[in-house]
Length: 504
Figure 1 (cartoon, one colour):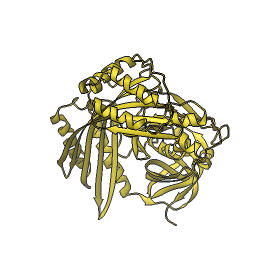
Figure 2 (cartoon, rainbow, N blue to C red):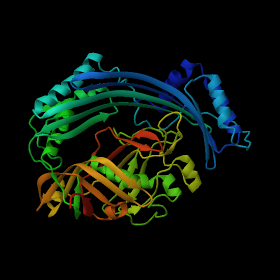
Figure 3 (tube, rainbow, N blue to C red):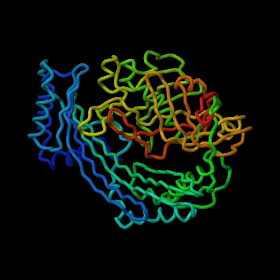
Figure 4 (cartoon, one colour):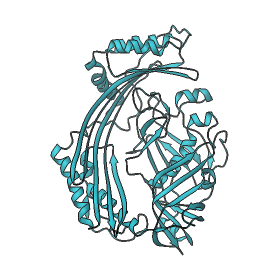
């Protein structure tokens, strides 16, 4: 594992030296930025390289490769933030950007920046590999073509298969007026498969994905073959064999699509709901996580504002946001402001403990940043964002939680939803769910929409499983026009009373 100093030195070579910039010049520009009397500021360089392959109608329809790089200069004074940026990395562009970024402050500061090029923050991800060139062009084409063939071979009702294989590497380098130097490498690979099936004129769609901060060989690794009618977290069937991960993604997409063909409409009503482990944590991410970000809380735009120390969830619930999680989708070494990544307890045994902060909102609230200041690109400003947000496991067995339902819904997968953080209201539609009666899963249902209030729903959690699982590694989150990678997870859990929208 490389050290923080190694990462900075490598980034300096790839982002500064090749563009004719020196550390001495960076120091000069930081001094000019700081001399304007701003509270703090930074210069943020980024270089992104990406490649993608897309298949539909059993043909490779597109292949794309791109390189994007640039820098942003930020100045912060009170609640005011200015950003000047350029996609040309050179002395002239940097000098002009610094001049623009410092123009809004009328204060004076004569102290110099003491830049430290030997940072000591802990490295959780060094990204010391090249995902794009980890497989040959021929092997990438082989994977997407084989997924198409395999998906079609699983069932004659498969009418269309779409596959997307992508790889990227994002490298950033940060210098702050506090003297901090930090660098990040964020390689990522993603594989997506969507399938359309048709039976007697009825069509349904299934979707599955997999991703990780790894190289493309990740998709060639063998994983257990699950029975085709496998219900996650419930099936006791033994695993029969192994298959490549790319085949498992195609298999899961077909399984979901066929499952929808036999799904029945769910009747609307208030009933207990069990959420499966893993991706269903998107409900917590959206309805709880966004409400605990420092900007919305400081501005009174969250139902959780002013409630530190209050009981906001069942005492079975402890929720953390952890940027240090091993192999987490949202894991990093330092945030976009140079603050080391942290594990922050947000809710502990149902008690609200704290919020997620960037530097600006932390300063306005008189607290320290929690390492959640993130930006999507060099031209963006950092804002409070989640990293890996998850509910800690409890003591209940998943099977026992499902068996506890006399008449309810077991929700396995969601496609997102709508959230009003100020009122704490949410609406989520399950893409895979089942009707449970007398403790047994009876049949799949469709159009099951969960409607409720975040705080009420969390207080209604009566059972928490011991099977914490995380998302498929492809999670990303949008806020203020910025998309960043995030992780989320939870064990199986039971909510005693949720409004389920459906047919009358």
